[in-house]
Amino acid sequence: MNPSEAARRGDAPGIVGWQAVVKRTLDVGAALVGLLLTGWLIVLCAAWSTRVHGASGFFFQERIGRYSHRFRLIKLRTMRTDLASTTNVTTALDTRITPFGAWLRRTKIDELPQLVNVLVGDMSLVGPRPDVPGFADRLEGENRIVLSVRPGITGPATLHFRNEERLLAEQHDPEAYNRDVVFPIKVSINRMYVEQYSLLWDIRLLVSTITGR
Image 1 (cartoon, helix red, strand yellow):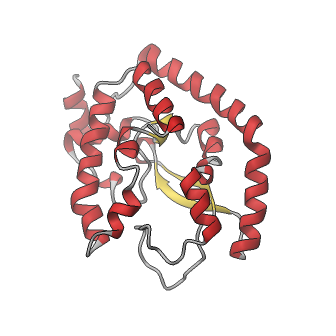
Image 2: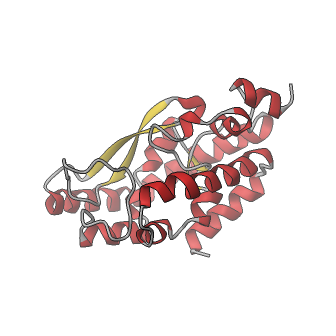
């Protein structure tokens, strides 16, 4: 069965064989090293985030993972809790984001706890960014190949939209723009990533993420 036929059935093979083994081995090794090196920073920032936001410094949110399995993504809290808010779209002008939270988001330190997600197998260092329910889990046909791999902390679509929050802030209707413009482009980029996967590409994406280039 070729990838297109498998994708239509919802069981696209994605990244398989030795590449999948090496990718997972690198994920586990890098996550362990990353947590050993940055664990102190995560704990320190979580403690300060608790003080700033008046709630747990860690933020948990349900996301869609490999084969549509749901998991709890871990981040450092960057926003005040607003029970009246019903949107999952965050823009650069979101008043819920605190100054400390903005710094965490700008430096990407808020993403570091996801190394735990990588370690337990929910995520990979590199892959399609995990969406909240209502987006990736509704993919159909060949687009479902995106769900055949673990979602990543970073990835080609993430880097392409590295200024996504600023872009959404410029739109009259951020939710509609995210749904009708941004999401389809992300799906296209992520499909290409899976279908043309190489470990070298993963390394390049990690370097681009770290260097900001």
